[in-house]
Image (cartoon, rainbow, N blue to C red; front, top):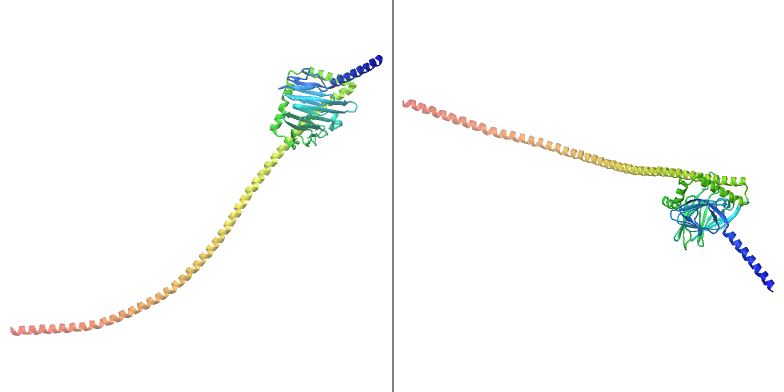
Length: 406
């Protein structure tokens, strides 16, 4: 009986030790390496520096004005911004087939993801969990910002018409109440607690500044003069060691690193090209809009001018009609005037005839008067002659008497 108990206890101890060993292996499962770092970035047990290993289920915390970039074993890149807390919950990767699964959770802050080999094999195999729901990456580059009760997600690219023949990027934002697909570069959507995700919208300049601000500290770290080539070489060596431990040969390791560097360059070039194309398209649109606006303004002006011309034509027509009417009226008045003149002429003629008759009558009357006057004058003259003769006779008699008396 004692022997049986000892055997049973031994089995339990062996099982417990195996389980503990498995837990230790799971806890120490390598996920990636710290590529670049700025400020203070910690886990639960240590402060991170460039070249440190990142293990499964480690919580990475970046303080204010800090950030880090983690290079995962499948060549994915996780960039953690300031005031952020990120955990790698699941990382399964088979280098032989590129099969695997990645699940990360963002409790707060910002995370930028560039997908690698796992997503290339299966676009739906990379998921980022946020407090309001999940973000399903489909072979792309995107960034998410988690704040109090709200998560904003931005799709960076590449687009459908990228020149490198890369898989078009997309992010499926969803929760139990609904989902929204981001498939146009630089489109974004927001998700709040207890609500379905909002519709996809084109990001504004101010919103893009907020997204970029979260990664500002890390960009400064990359461009800082303190970072030397030796650090980069050390990082590459560590990556080589890790890849060797996973069973890759030297040539495969070199090709993977070259491919990774080349892809990074190609992605940057593609992003630059897309941005340049967008700028050109915006400029073209702006020019086209300006032309349209000019044309519209010209059309409006032409319409106004046309209306004015029509109005002037109408007014001129009206004026012509009025003038015609006035002319007709004038003609009518002239006719009336001519009639009046004719009427006036007729009575004038009549008046003249009457006057002539009156003059003739007057002349006749005058003649009669003259005749009448002449007759009495002759009588008077005769009388005067008679009187003169009598006087002369009296004077002669008187002279004779006087002579006689003498």
